[in-house]
Length: 475
Image (tube, rainbow, N blue to C red):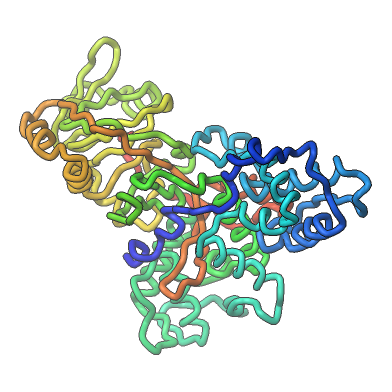
């Protein structure tokens, strides 16, 4: 679908930053946080910068600034607090999430502030701490527009006293179609039509099923609420999107793999250029895939799968020996092990990753799940669309194609180390961009935006939650 072309501005999150990591020359110049002094001019710059914090979705947070320059320590404390919110985020993802190991920015803010004071450029320094890319600027622009009624985005889809039934004519159809396209439920809007036709009906039914609503294709109150976010909901989500961007390293590795868990898409970057995007299947809402920074260090051809105790006890126990034989499973040293082959839950390739949570990328025999819109359907690991093709691509780029093809041909579990580990970031972003460059708000499948928005001062969302089904016993 078109999000392969669109989404990577947020999937990739490839940022450059001027100022965030600049701390090298302070010791030579003799400028320190202790001997730098605030003036009326630099204090005014700080106040103005904080007054403009809505540009970063921070307008619901308070940052106190002394009214004069007599309390130098208080001014410094205020500046460092606001600078930290811009440079690393106003919240700590490690405290908001059960697991969060993605590298975060770590600038020397005290040194940066001292240099800014010495130059009289506190405003420039603060402006340089946020992500310096078009994606962040677009989020900021959209957020500010929602705060100004005269400049706000297109009006919401109006409600109506009666539900919208299949086959009906309604002037709201183009707006509804646009949202279905933005959410990936519809390939393209109907051409110049206000008729609620079969393609749209099928799209609405799929959406209803994903949200636990009776899939009758009738657009009633609940379906319209899913399609029709309020301005406050959109503003909240845009602010969270900016905060999540501030959590991330401004200079990520030029070669890396980024997986957006919210949209279930993967982006592969090679030497700073986008080399590939593809769909993935990630954890169900009750078995979420965590936000990890964890490198791939080897390919595993024809992998075996040792079934985790949780899956073994909940989903396999009691199924008997016939089930094990049908699925090429057997008991080994007290564990159920699935042998290599086309029925193996890991498919024909596994991408081993270095982390303590037993999370990795892999192939799958359940190819039908890639056709789903909401692909949060695994037990936590990440299943990659056309994983064999992806493995061949990485092997070619890493110069190990010959070794990889030999390992595949052996028909048994074989390991092919990568010459250099490839960093992987499992991130979570619920805002993507359409072909016109406008932000599109997608589902929050894990409900992870709530804690972030609360930390930013927003009320909790009362929106509908996804309830995707159709998972299997695989990891």
